[in-house]
Amino acid sequence: MRETTCAGLTGRVLEIGFGSGLNVRWYPPEVTSVTAIEPSDLGWQLSERRRVRSALTVERAGLDGQRLDLPDDSHDSALITFSLCTIPDPLLALREARRVVRPGGRLHVLEHGLAPDESVRRWQHRMEPLQRAVAGGCHLTRDTPSLVEETGWRIEDSEQAYLPGPAVSRPWTYGYRLLAG
Image (cartoon, rainbow, N blue to C red):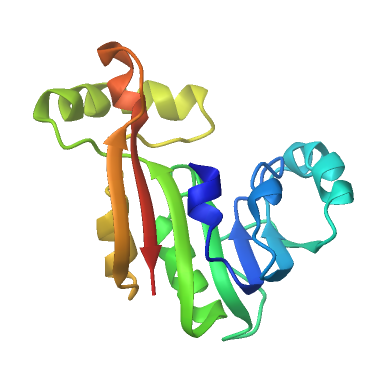
């Protein structure tokens, strides 16, 4: 899923929620550099091995995806994987990505969130307070496509599905892969 989400990234990439660098191996050759936004010092430390192995320059340029100290139109693409669920205000982060990505640039998103099935959604709403408490503020009920569109991005390609596994895991495993411009 990460490989498919990273396909088509070009030029200077803004990655919000860089984490331990799991996407580094999937950056296509058209990527020239990466600006990493990562709030966790531990996540940044864990990414060191992946960053060192990469031929790309990966620069940490902030801790907060909601407030980017980067110039307007300074990046060609943006990448967000499994991070919108924990950002306190995902609309701010998506607006900042819109501001920083040049006109004609693309947003690539891989995220989990609100399921289409009412019975699963009920469980997501019931379990979200516990999930937020034990999983770093992770929300189960965010409607990622709506958030993306609300911030001025236009979804050009979308896949939505449950990850494989038992039905009991469905509150955590409904995912979105989005490409927006």
